[in-house]
Length: 88
Image 1 (cartoon, rainbow, N blue to C red):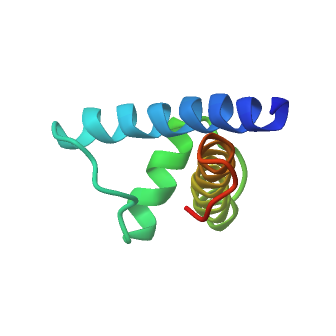
Image 2 (tube, rainbow, N blue to C red):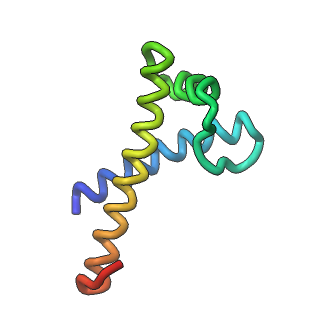
């Protein structure tokens, strides 16, 4: 349960920071990461990722996918416990 709490806490913080930056840029709700590498690099820099452009872009993509996956796994684990182990 502690791992799930950590995954949810860290994932929420990362995704909220990402959403906030996208809202500032677009003045609207974000629907996901832009496919444009230049936009991703700029976003990664605003999230304080450091290193060469290609590295920060890959790290942003990795962190985004990692947090989304961890949140989904935690959600499914909690849902499974709440439903008595049935499939979700």
